[in-house]
Length: 546
Image (cartoon, rainbow, N blue to C red; front, side):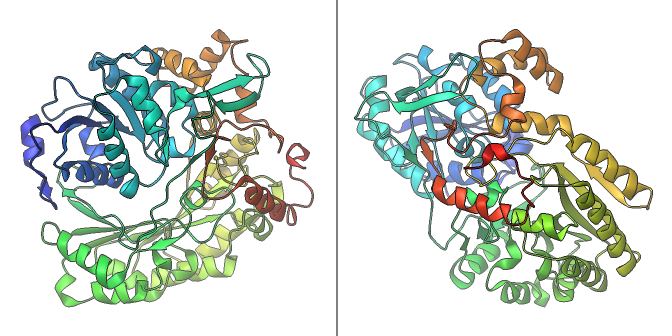
């Protein structure tokens, strides 16, 4: 069965033939094959390694693998979802490796990790990894492999100290974290000596040739899809948004030299095309791209788009998507409150949202999905009423268009201006309020679990002490209650859960990721936070004031 699954892949590149002395590498994804092979990031890292003659790479998923080397030198993980960490621990054990980096010896591989979760805040998982790669892989992966080759025959500590000099390569064991008390806040995060950089800078790829699928398969979670990255990051910079702040600056793929050749290459093996990016329709040549895909030779192509900017939903866009077998479109509105949108720097108004719905229907789309959020800092009950009113206005303006509001709870993310805020405990009741109001008006409301949002916030703001909690939770079962049970057992050894989840942190507090530099310095994030207060009626927490 394993061979059959890999044999059904259609590759968009030709792997190199490894040299006799190539470095044996296992590249793991901590989930099933269908999920992992759908990850564009995993695909790109795999192809980057497979194109090198000095590397022999084998893929590992939770349900299958390629033939694995007996003595791998590097074991890499791509982590896209926080709760997949338990699969990492299981895969380490299956390979006969200690969970914690300090227990591994010179004969065992260096365990490295990357991906959006680890780039944002690796600290809850830091003790499980020897090496963490922060940022975009285009330059980071080749630099990491080249640096490893230079010390390949050295002992473990020499390898780690050498790799620590590579920009974007973070070696957690070379940084000491101290606390005011075992269950108190962080006192300091410092390198163990002056040879180690005091800060590690997230690496940013600045080219105009972005990523595209390296493999297409009917066994992917998105069957037979070929993915093309149209833009990277987002120019809107909503103040809670990790996808924007962590990946700055906004970059666009060149239409003629990158996008069109990539699309044509993918359409030789499939007729399903996915255009990816946090703000796809804000590509400066998006209309030209739409015109290109509207040509008769692409009539049999099924086209999918990621979430799009509200004011770019035109009748032309909707008609093109409807013709290409897309029935709905997704836009992020966050709230129906103009004041709240100003707090978070969401640059749109209700008239634009209503017009997007009208255009979607006029172009032949059957449904419109909106993304909303509750618990945003500064939110009041009148803001929830404004969201209900907005949905009612949309329904009236575009009758017959199926409306869905997917709604999450605000979760603070590292490297954003709202990283100092906690989760609002009232958010659960606010989700129920919207559910009652919207469903009674015949609209589809799909709330994300508040309890799992709490766990997401815990990991988003966690420090190294959480690794002991994660180990316990893994054995208790995959439920929010397992985390609270773990906190009870570890009482006195780490702060209570409310410290990580609900507390608003002081601006001068040492954050778990203070030694890891994102695209913007902390002073700029604080300025953006000050800008939010202009619209907040002084109701943002005083805990985060200077």
